[in-house]
Length: 308
Length: 276
Image (cartoon, rainbow over all chains, first blue to last red; front, side, top):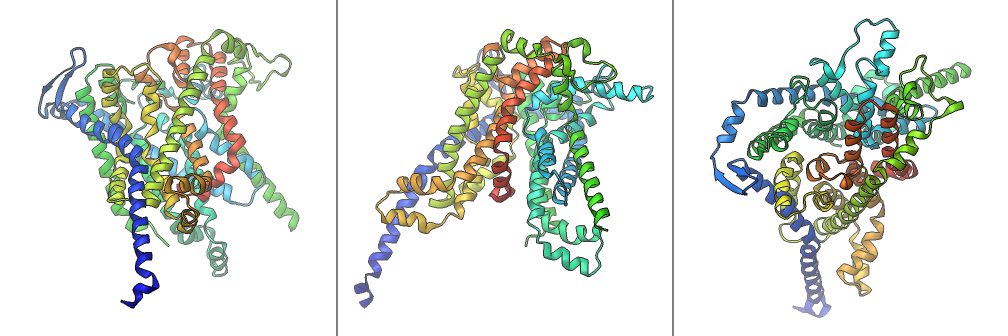
């Protein structure tokens, strides 16, 4: 009880009330974010689920309950399965390509070289430039008969150069390539940051032990940058699943549905056929695929991600 | 020996520089073509720039005869308002979730993060219906409002404030500042770097947005730059030099901001919590 005289209880009391004040203020500070989140994320999410269960008439603003009919329609729609296949095919090209290119470019920038700043700027430029503007350029650049790429190929003696956006086999891989080209600058900066965080001492020790260049990469660099790689893997998966601009601007989902990914299928269902309920059902499915892929990678990270 | 090392070093640098140039070939071709006449676009042999007779008329035409300046103004308006409000909301939210804390704040925040995986194509559907209902379609507010709340931005500001030194804020309390006052006078000035990065990233991202204007806008005078570009592409399908000049003009504002601030931008990405 004597400790009371030391003023300790008063101090705890003050600290306690300060904490309470901070907590109250915290709620107040978070209020705009909470309200915004509620209005623009949570409520829309609930709405979009309800939307997939109701038939909506936008003219009369009437709703009619349809159970899981739209999901049923979706699962029996060959166009839907085609869009799932196209999305996965896009991912198979886009994800590894973007990660590998990003790492390669970061390794270049991390090596001893002149004019590093200029090369770094070149690598990042597509990432910061306006996507639609670059797509307008790509559209002409890859024009099958008049574009500079095919003009060059033909002058080099290639008889039948690829037709890119109008060829069902070429279109989707080209869109994935353009997507990788656009996004890789971000990966490059992130990998570069991770590489610069690796201490030089490790390499010196490994060199003394006689480890070659590849071994040094495999046993030192790769594990040490793996948290960044994992983060970028997740970002790339999300970005790949949501790719849309190339399809909307270059191919309109064609030729013959070969570039209709799930996002384009959603767009077309909602804003060309005004079937919001069906589009919501497909959107929910896309969300589900995203969660499954993220969860699988989250569980798989134990095998290769190394936290210091 | 030193001479050959030096030579190898130079050769390697030149190779890397060439790789960098190949990487941006489409953009170099864009600049080159924008300064040509239509009949020179596919000329052979290829000339990068006709130094004697550079054609500026594509640019002049776009600036005087098209709606480009309206689109530019619309883009600037939408992007600036969105970024300012997003920064404000993210700084307040980040301070609340990362520093002040409140009951269930960590749990609520985890819930926030899960929603990062929702495809934006999905949330746009009910947004479209509600904006249509309250009459926000074809206004710039339909583009701005959803951009203000960005979970990733709140996350980044929270990361910064998680490790913010308590002593600094408590010293401000001692001097009689209230919680809000110490936030404005102590926390915010020290959060300048992450806020600059966040502001720039948001600027590039919102400037780029095409899906939202595509579904929310229909009058041409409301278009932002990406929509303007797209409508121009459909309208002037065969005027390639003109299209390239417009693409150039669309890129110049972002490129200018990037080149002016790239040192701070890259350094702060490298040093901030943006690494995840």
